[in-house]
Image 1 (cartoon, rainbow, N blue to C red):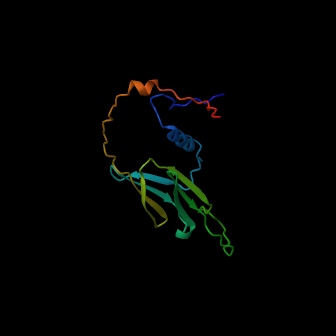
Image 2: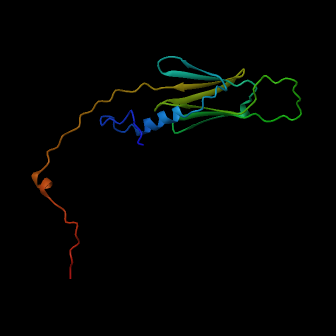
Image 3: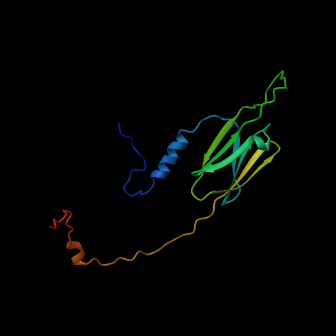
Length: 153
C-alpha cells in the first residue's frame, strides 16, 4: 500500500526534508518526563525550560544534529544512599525538539533545577530577484547526438 503525502502537490518542490521532519515529530515519544515549558520572548526569541531537579551540569547533555535539539540527562548512581521514600524522579531521559531552519541555540543555563535553553530565530530577509530569460537558438534545438560508437578501422 502506498503512502499518501500531504506534500505531494507538484507546486511544492523540495519539501521532502520537511515531510521527513513531520514524520519524526509524529513518531516522537509521548513521555512527559521531564516536564517543560516553551516561551516566546519576542518576535525572534524562544526559551525552552526543562524541570531537571536533582541533575547536575555534568549529568546533562545538550546537542544539535540535523535541526534536532536533543537534551539528555543521566544521573550518576549513589549506592551509599538508602531511601525510605523516593518521590523525586532520578531516571535518565531524552527530550528532543525539531528546530525550524535557521533557529540557533544561543545558550543553555542550569539554574535552581531548571535548564533554560535560549533560542534565536533570525527574521528572514525578503529576497526577490528576476531570472533572465535567454532565447534558445533553433540550431541547438535541432542538434542530435549519436550515441552509437563509430567503428574507425
